[in-house]
Length: 314
Length: 206
Image 1 (tube, one colour):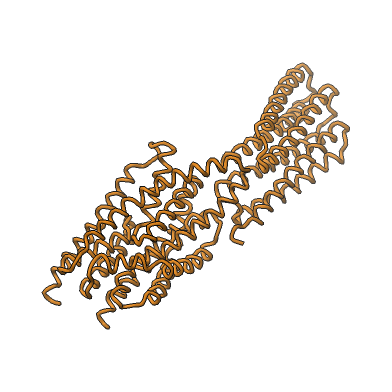
Image 2 (tube, helix red, strand yellow):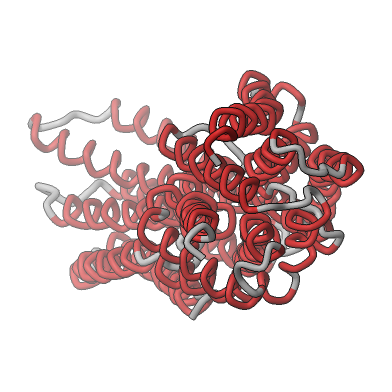
């Protein structure tokens, strides 16, 4: 029982970290635009994350916890501890690191190092979904932007503004739901599939920790992201966020752990392409793509190293 | 209320009130100088005070979070410019009341014509805002505002040419007339600015 505490605490830390950092994905724009208060957004987030984790979280939990690596307690402890460390360190240093990639990289790394079975067909599917989901979001954003432009062009400005406010809240709801069904589920998958917690217990503990992270630490991030995006262009922000929400929802249904942040970036690039390639900041894109490649490799490497170092003692 | 449409409706209602106040002030001012009606000119000052209160209410509602930022900033600027129209009309009324002696009839005729065009422009501004609200054609009405402003510029040049041929008894008398004309012409410039902001608002969500 005592050994189970390490992966449990690690998961709790990851959930807390997701809450503190990723709340901005869901309600950043709405809070920044003053459509909803931070407090209301946080309560709504808590409810939707829980619903997402309970209704659809099992799909992603199964992929991450059951179909990727044959788990044992050593793998669980090393992978989740390293993931938690990397995610918290990245948040602290403000590095663009995806929690999904950190967890998947760690699980595969420690599974490989401890000589367990790593299912490369599942790994390949996951990597494919990491590639396809932002690209899908990119094309969807183009379609959404074009359709909106076409419809809204015929409506009075105040009506457009009102519809946009409702759509931004709808976006927030979809992404908050995805946070529970995908992001939190990725963190909880290993401990649920190993039997440390039941899916419902994991959903409750995970939601509470995520909510606490959001409540205690996310306000500044939410405001920064929200004001930053809306000051650019409300339509672009909406199109990118909406397409990301739909893309993640589709991959959640398929049980694939994908990053909302990367999908939003895909959506932003899509809208940027519509407005002219010169509007895209390629140096920033290169940095993000580098992180996309480095994060899983780095966590894989750290887990291998940690596993080799501690193997003689356990 | 999550979607907050109540606050937005209140702001639109207040803006309409603000624009109607400008319309009334333009009417009173025109009547005031046409008939040398002191009461009508003093009413312009009262309307300016009402306008101030409306502007404060608009600012407060916008500060509370009415509308998304893309629209909010332009609406705030719009209410400020509309309020400047009222401030300038008040200046005109006071300057007219403080003129050392009555205007010559020929000069007054020019001023009444300008005041009449200002009144028409304020009606156009009301129409422009209604068009923005209902997605009617904005181009025609904003073009009208611009054309009328150009007319005022032309009249002003004629007026100055006319004034330069007149003898002025004292520096202060000349300055008082000049200040009054500057303020009077400034009203049309500000109404044109407000019309431009309506155009900006129209494209702000595109």
